[in-house]
Image (cartoon, rainbow, N blue to C red; front, side, top):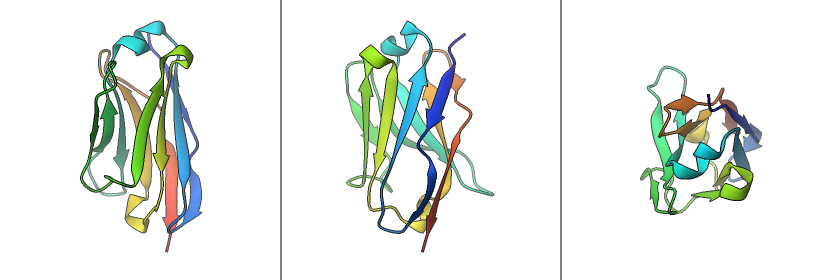
Length: 113
């Protein structure tokens, strides 16, 4: 069973930055596409960014040029660097291991105007 532990969320003013981390507990993490998703109150969970095992990256249009996804396979960790944050980025952010369908517990990101 792959387990994921997310961290790095918090409260930040608009225009600020946060860096989310997601650590996996098993080596299978390294073989999988990893993703960050988010869910705002009253809304469906949506894709933020994904990164394949080979490093190919995809972003939602709403975060392009502001967010950067990366991974360190030696540490079983995927990151989400979030810059120029906006109030509409407020959500619970979840990490996902595509190959197993595992989700992390989520980390709250709140951006104040």
